[in-house]
Image (cartoon, rainbow, N blue to C red):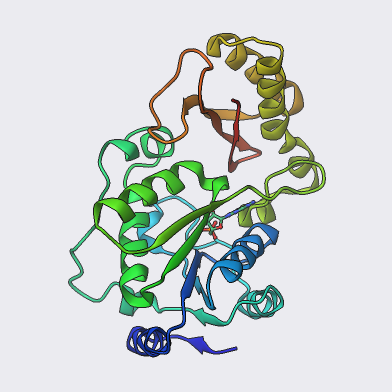
Length: 281
Ligand code: AMP
């Protein structure tokens, strides 16, 4: 399986594949791959001839004091997993080449990035949209697959793809969970055994919300109160960054459950910041 580390080589390879009539699928990741990433690769493979997986821990999407330096990395393990999932090419660009000296050009999406994660992590989405626009320009994919796990990111990048007119089929794959319900995430590696158990508070809270909606409780304040209770009874030291109820595609806040509403939340469990979400209706 070819591993490409230079931008020029990746561009060249993509052009050649396209000239041969091959449809290119792209799966951008930050590595330390798990079953969620592999589901995206398999999905891309079903919708393209050649799948390019990228591994890049993007410094521009981490604020000072976040976990950029200690973000888990395992290139050898990742390459094995990508090959096992049917990936064809891996692109691992160098930060110095992605962001050369004097770099000062950014891509930004406006309103959609002011809420949820954007309100707690200023600058985060500017880093995400900039790196993904660069990856689109380098790889020139026909199809791209992102995960619903990062729900707001999927919405923001869909907007960017449309607004900038990239001719790319945009796909969002469902969240893959561990057997007990915890959403798979590279950051789960930070959880010690107690924190791993208590990390289920996010999933339990979302399940509670869904169950309430099934019994026709439609008032988000009531639902949020129950969710807070579930989180703190599962993980008494949890710090809740936010619990939000928003429209699936516009991210506008909802006061009542009606139409496509997504509950999303960010919680610090023993100091590890986790996010998750679920469609309620
Ligand atoms: P990351 O490596 O965390 O930047 O994630 C790369 C891609 O994998 C993003 O599109 C994520 O939304 C997606 N992803 C991460 N975790 C999961 C999961 N548990 N299920 C499905 N997709 C995921």
